[in-house]
Amino acid sequence: MLVAGTQAMKTAQSAPKHAQDPGERIYMNNCESCHMLGKNMINPEKEIVSSPKLTSKEIFKDFLLQRNGVMPAFPEIANNDRDLKELYAFVKRLKRQRWEYEQKEPSPPAEPERPKQPPVVPPIR
Image (cartoon, rainbow, N blue to C red; front, side):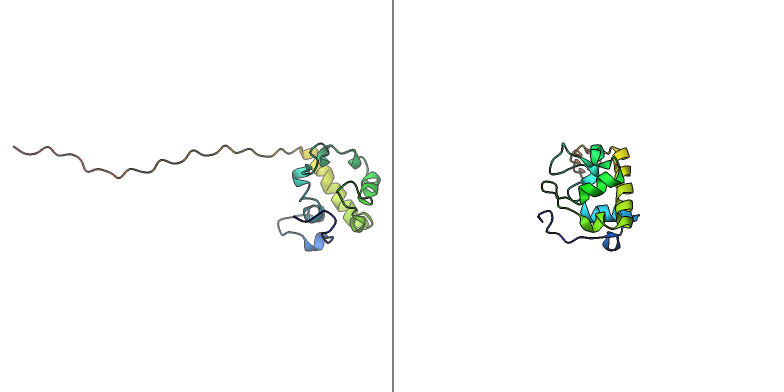
C-alpha cells in the first residue's frame, strides 16, 4: 500500500479511460483510493459528501494547499485554475449524490443436476 503523499501527482491527462470529464479523471487519479464514492476510507466520520470544505472553491483550494492529517497537500491541483475548477465541480456533484455501498446477498449454491433415470418398465409375463 502506498502512503499518501508518496505517490506522484497525476492530472487529467493520465486518467483512467472510464473517467468521462477532467474533474472525474483528476479525482480518480488523486482522491479515489482514499475517498471512494465520496466517502473517507481512513476516517469514515470525515467523508467528502458532508465536508464543509466544499462551501466555496476558495475554501476548497486552501484545504488542498495544506497537509491535513494523513492527507497530503495537492498544490499542483490547487494552483492550476482549470484543474481546481474541474475537481471542485466534480466533488460538488459527489456531495449531491449521497451514494451508499451496494450490499449484495450471497447467492445460494446451485444444486447439482441429477442425471436423468430411464423410466422403469415392468417386466412382461
